[in-house]
Image 1: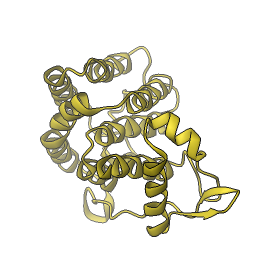
Image 2: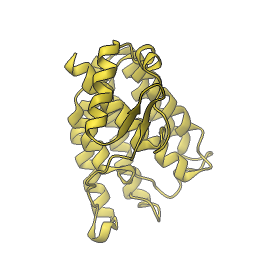
Image 3: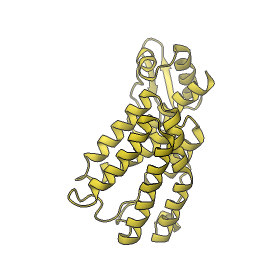
Image 4: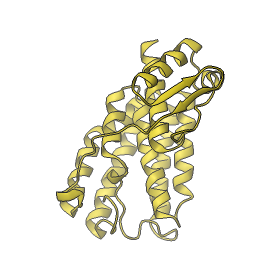
Length: 229
């Protein structure tokens, strides 16, 4: 039960961090969480208790649990004053490759149906955001964060959370619907498809191809102004 509880805590914490459930808003009901995540009421109650202990939610009898604040994180800075240089972002991609490739493989082995649905939602949002750079970056980040959550190992999610959306590399023409964007969406689809099939080797390979291609695009075009890379 402990692992299931921690996975639910990680997932709900990510929802709060992403702004899906905002401060002042109510979490889904206990019954809804049981049905969505396929866990027992005991797991849900323990997860809510941990969120309360962390100061993220408060529960009112008869009304439900409400978000108090977004979790704080100690973000990695990608350069002096948080300004990303080409060298900084290239190094960040190397670092991401070191853990995200294996995270994809673990997610393929361990993901739940609910986690796969969450991954699909993030990918669909990314694919539909070609004309909205900020939306695309946030959806792309959610996609990678949710892969980390699906590993069932909270250290992966903690690391991705600490990096934040600035970990997403955005070449200048990335959001051109008639250019490379469709290809980048396809790279994400390949990762998703392997995780959906629970094919760890294919997930590992697809993640490596995506991050390698991101590195190539970065060197060709440089990071877009105003982004983390």
